[in-house]
Length: 331
Image 1 (cartoon, one colour):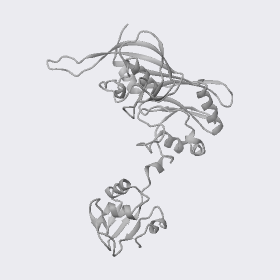
Image 2 (tube, one colour):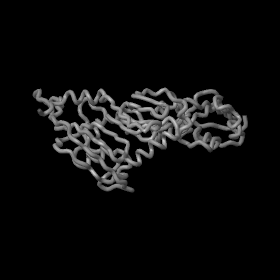
Image 3 (cartoon, rainbow, N blue to C red):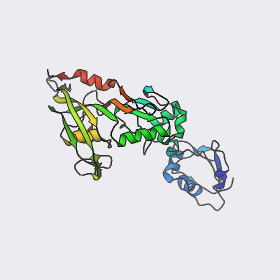
């Protein structure tokens, strides 16, 4: 068991690797010793392995700040990096509206991330697609051609082979894919209109997009049509048993010409009508609402094999429907 990284290079991934600290090794903290022995792994990853019981010192579970000494025996189970799980098949729940040899129309639940990324390297729709449709391993991004935000529910289309993927991407570029959303926004809207405002990263908040002061802005066009307005009663009883406030809200249909990140959320907030539950863009959380209330209700595109125009619709997500049912709509 030499004190060298070659030991773990020869070990099967499922087996632990073992080091015997050299007689002239310095006395030092366990995490520092591991960083010296396994320099290809970051200190934070090594500390995580220690905290999760994946490192033993002389047969006992190691502690991050404990000291190790010459002659000590270290046993380490190498853990896969989160990034390595990004394109692995996992049994993830999602709905399928329809499928053909060329495409799959997915009904994504709220709370499911579409594609792996920082902080979400596993448990995504992509992982679920690879589990349910193993052939997608040979298609870039497992056939995903457009995304929905984590907390947006509803329809998106996935290609089952590269030619269909190219066909769908070209339709998106030509703006011939029709995407229609239902949103519940703050305030009362009376007339249909269009928001044409470029969108880019917000210079002050990295996770936000902005139409007011965007970095590297791109053109974005959202058409919206109010369906009905009303008031959402908040319970929040005050002293004396009085009911909480009544918020004016409007159910809106939004149609996209472009597909920028957070487009509907940014555009509706930019005209003073943020989505209910969208605290990132100025919306408020209502009772019984755990996300921004946006649902991709309808999707239309041209079939790869036949050229036929296809149309699909999704029932409103249960949480959105529940909120809509509690609103006192104006007649």
